[in-house]
Length: 469
Image 1 (cartoon, helix red, strand yellow):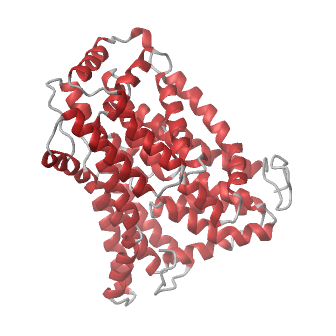
Image 2 (cartoon, one colour):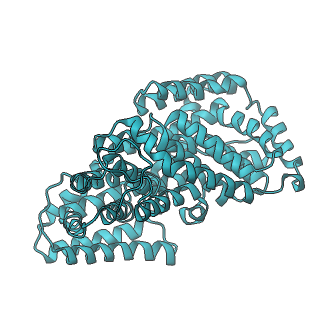
Image 3 (cartoon, rainbow, N blue to C red):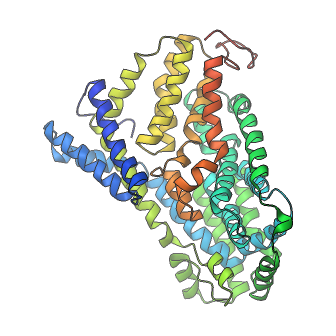
C-alpha cells in the first residue's frame, strides 16, 4: 500500500486537517455513540470520496485506491479464517477444554491476573504470535475468569499484555523481524536493545496485575470444581489433546509459514476430534464453518465452549477490509505522503527526531489501524533522518515496536483491536486501561528520548550510554 501512486499533492496543512476530520468522525462515533466500527469507517470513506470528487479525481481512481488498500490485507484475511477453523478444531479435539481444566488449577493460587500475564508472555515468546496466543491460551483464561467472577476486562488486559510481550520479543515474530529488517539492524541486536523498554514495562505490569488480582481465599471454588467435573463427564479432557498445541509450537519454532502451521495443527485436532467425539465428517465440516456448539447441559461449559468456526471471523474480516480500504484511499489522495513530508520539516535535533518518529508510528496506528504499515512507513520515512542525526539505527527499530507493534491492539478500529475483541469478547475500550504493557512501552520510549537515557550514536557499542539530545 505504501507504494500506491498518489493522484493529488495536498499541502501539509490541508492533509493534516483531512486526517483530523476522518479521525474525528471515527473516534467520535465509536467512543461517544458506541457505534460498531464498520459504519464510522464507511462514513470516513464517504468523506474522503467527496474530498476526491471536489478535487476532480475520477471516481475510478478513488475506487482503485480503496481496492488496492483492501488487497494488501488478503494475507491477513486468510490467516483469520484459519484461526477461526483452528479454534473450532481445538475445541472439538479437547485442546482448549483441557487447557481450561488445567488452568482452573491456577485459580487456587494467588495473583491470578499476574499468572495470566506471565503464562501468555511465555507462550507468546515461544510461538511468536500474539493472535495465536490470545485465541488459544488467552481464550481459556477468559473462560476461567468468567467462572470465578473475575474481571474480564483486566483478564483481557493481562492476556493482551503478555501476548504482545511475546510478539515483540520473540525472534519468531513477523513484526520483530519486520522492524529489524526495515532499518537493517541485526535481529538479536534489535531484541537486545528493546530490553531497555520491555523489561521495565514487563516488571511494572506484572506488579500491577499482582496487586489487582482477586483474593483467592475469599472465592467459592465450588463452581470451578463443578465445571471441571462437567468437562470430564463430557469427555473433553484428554492429555493427547495437547498434541495440536505442541505441533503448533514446533512448526512456529521452525519458522514454517503461519498458514501451513495453522492448517497442520487444525488437521491434527480434527483427527483427535473424530476419535474423541465420534462424529461424522459432515458434522465436523459444519463445526469448522459455523463453530462448535456445546450441548452438555451445563450452562457454564456450554457458554465457554460454543464458539469458533470460519464464520465467526466474518465480523473481523469485514472490518479489516474496510480499514485497509480507508488506508488505501488516504494514500491514493496523497494525504499520508504529504503529512510525512511535512513532519520531516520539524526534525532539528535528535530528541525531536525520535519523538516525531514515535508520534508517526502511533499516528499511523490511529489513522489507518494497521500494524505493519506503522512499522513500514515509519521505518522508511525516518531511517535517513536517524542517519543524519547520528542516532544508531537500533533505536529506530525499537521505536517501531514500542510505538507500532504494541499500540495497534489499543485502537478500536485497528486490525489487532477488532480481532482481539471478537476472540475474547471484551471491547477494546474496556480492556485498554488494563493493557499495561502496551501502554507503558511507548511511554518509556518517550521518556528515554526526552532524557537521552539508552540513546546512543551510530557507532557506539554501549547501548546504555546517554548522549546529548
